[in-house]
Amino acid sequence: MKPRYLLCLPLLLLLAMGALLGGCRSEPLPFRLTNISGHMPDLDFKLTDDNGKAVTGAEYRGKVVLLYFGYTHCPDVCPLTLAQLHVVMQRLGPLADDARILFVSVDPARDTPAVMHAYVNAFDKRAVGLVGSARAVEALSKRYRSAFTREPGDADGNYEVSHSSAIYIFDREGKARLLATPSASQDDLVHDLHLLLDTGATP
Amino acid sequence: MKTTRLPFRHAGLLLAGLLLAGGVQATAAEHVRASHAWIRVLPGNLPAGAYVTLHNDSAQPVALTGASSAAYAEVMLHHSSTAGGMSRMSMVDTLTVPAHGEAVLAPAGYHLMLMKPKTPVKPGDTVPLTLKFSDGSTLATDFAARPANAVDAGEPHAAH
Image (cartoon, rainbow over the protein chains, first blue to last red):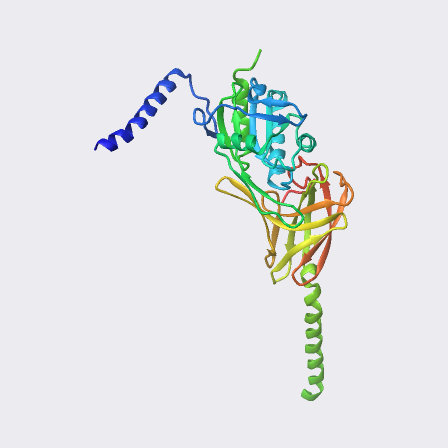
């Protein structure tokens, strides 16, 4: 009896905290994508952007951020996801200027800032390529329970990287709010990004 | 009557046999029609994905085994899959185009991975690829080079 009671205690505490937090909040936004508000840590990293500048998560406060892990030697799914996000940004119109697509490379050996710069700009001018040491990238991916593995290479040194396909969406305060998959409908992405971009706009 | 018709019957059989034998080499490609052929061009020397829809009008399934192109040093038949929230690519040996059916090579599924462009390929270019089938037959197909942020073949009559 006693051990079971002890196991339940943290759960009860969590529930109580949730109720309290919920009580403080105004109406929750009617999101269509998976709502991860309060379940994932705030946007935070130390990486290098595609202009070679050292950046942290704080750099993007005030912007709605779409975080996606991938690599440039991925000819199919990564470009499709970025192309679809570009269409979503186009549909948002001028509002999209307050949003950023952060494309984090999980292939630091091949993806230099210069390669990333050409790559992200081929998709959307509001896309930023981020690179970092294997350790820094791993830290960021672990933070969001994302994963990637490098597959064995061939004789030419070509190799593939398996990676998490999720798109993590953060609000202007850098709080994790939504999780989308590459197969999410563009309508849902546009809808939910509207909600995030319409709120807390910097005057 | 019987004796006079026999040689003709044999000739007919022989002809049919020759047609079949000759057909084995060319049949697959002859029965396949390609449409919506396009390439997503990425900057620099990055590998690009090529997509196409293959229609097979014969009563036999046909197997695509790969492709080659003068514009790229290497072409591989690949399949992307997403399982458990992870995306990965794998090489595949063949893609079957069912009898009286079609096989679609499209983003996030089957594609031809084009590696090491010999000369830069730009959006707007037309890139000839030679599709290869398991019987050794080939089908020359023109692929439209499209920008990185294209989502499909972008043909005005692409409504299917």
